[in-house]
Image: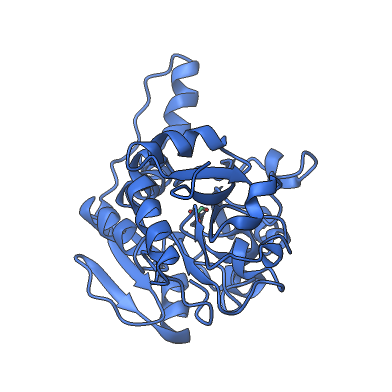
Amino acid sequence: MTDQDIIVIYHSPDYPITYWQEWLDKLTSRIILVPLDSPEASRAEVMITWNPPKGAIAQMPHLKGVVSLAQGVDHLLSDPTLPQNLMIGRLIDPFMSQSMAEWVLLAILKEHRDDALYSAAAKRKEWTKTIPKIPEDFTVSVMGIGAIGGHVAEKVAGFGFSVLGWSRHEKSLSGVTSLTGIEGFNRCLAEADYVVSVLPLTEDTQDIYNAESFAKMKPGAFFINCGRGMQVDEDALIAALDRGHLSGACLDVFRVEPLPQDHPLWDHPKVTIWPHVSAQTSPITAATQVFDSIMAIREGKPPVNPVNPARGY
Ligand code: GLV
């Protein structure tokens, strides 16, 4: 290593260091990624990470900032030892937003187009048809219509569904009725055939889908979650499915991940499980943004997509 090298700590259990190094190398030869437990890590001013061990960041003496290798930052802000003055950046990547929109549309369209029914009929070599459904007759509530959820909501609206969107502040999005506050929340739950949650995890959204919220949903509603598992009371969700109040659920996130082998959601006939892949991070699309954030933080400037810790995203 030379004086010109920029040491950056890398910690992300899902992808090897070489994957990110290779893409950052296309932008500069100066950034050297090092693992959290390497001797060089203590020299780093910047860390790029997903889900670092609690307490690890506070131990790095020269760290000025951290870049989340994800859209969410709850994995950082939930660390009580996180230094107050640390700059934090998150990813807002058009590829990830698009990927999440694809996943949400897949979950909706599988239901809307009776995929399970036709697949089962085809296995029996049966040629049966259901009555076509008109998207406009179906309401999709997208809970969380910020930078990412807003894109999801517009794409869903583009397919002709009637779309309501819920957020802290009113938004102007094509084809989306923007609602706020508790009244807006209740209306989104009451009117939706599909409740899609893209919310960030904050103190306000933790456990937001509990027995009371599921009871507020329209009978027969379908629940889709690609926000965070800690927002859902999973026992209450199972109870709502079992009593037939909800018709099904498609889940990408869980209170505990990986979902434990003995968890009842795995075997639930009305639930589809995905392993937190609705919007995976890719250095192919995100390396430039991560590079820009690393350089900004070193100069004491805010990263790209700076996080407001008080707001939680
Ligand atoms: C993934 O969960 C993310 O926050 O991007």
